Length: 451
Image: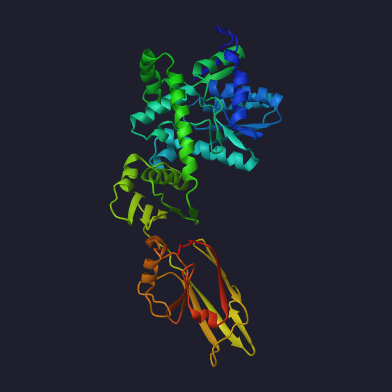
């Protein structure tokens, strides 16, 4: 680690109207956002970003705060945190910090140090953002980072959208320096007399990204001195294609419960793959590698399961997909008794509403009429079981097959049983028996089966 002051070096003129370009980027990608949580480590990139936001704050009515996560991986880390904290105090900027044992977390979860640090750092940033009401998290990734990411992912066989993984705006993450090279950022730091820390580990070529930075990029620069701008051009084209695919995928019919995601497969094979890839990232919170995608691509049957991580994966049936636990389905059973008390017929218990696997079911009492001589009947709300039949004697499995109910859904749908027979299936079947009792069952949500 080195504490750097570039004020005595050459090139004191601010590089290329950088502030004006920065202001334009923020206005383009965050035109309505008024509060930003800045991830600042103390390095040149994040200090320049902080300085630019301070200048922007003087022109626009916005709120900024700074968050610094201490990975406790180097002895200088505490000093760097104190440096950023003092900088914020001098400029009256809210400052937040936390630390964690990254090595222990990596060991327990079988992760690399880099991956463990990233997970813990972003957990901290999201926690601060949500606790203190910031709109966006701003990180100081630059154009060189984008180039290195492209090379790294290309070497590991990623797809086109995974290769250009960094975007100016992704969800609640803003990267306002993504269009600036490291050289431009350092020139700005010189012009503004900024001081910052230089992490000596950035030169350790045992780390993949550092090896790319110091060995691979210089070779590519011999082919194209403007290799960073070439990477930007590739990224811009890919972002546009990605936006189009995203707009198509977003039209997908889908819903989710607490622990499962359901969606309708597109008829287009390419869009199917993008549905699986994008929804898996959204639902599981981590990307699928090529081998996992190929498990889906290579499936021959119309109904099949694909495991991603032990019991977590996807099940495909009748053109629908379920993501989540593909092994187990929880059993459920609720008993509802209807009793005659004198001239009044009542539900027991009085609670007549159930929320099960995304289905909201309510029993409506409209002067229930029990059969003559019957003082009590018992209804049971439960899962489907093999061998179930409707009150008329038809196998429920045949009903499911006729209506093309996906296999994974069959044990999740709440059925209503009376005397060991099924008298109601949401959106699919209702026996005359319930009508004879003058009981109305209202169903909202859940899986709508087409006729």
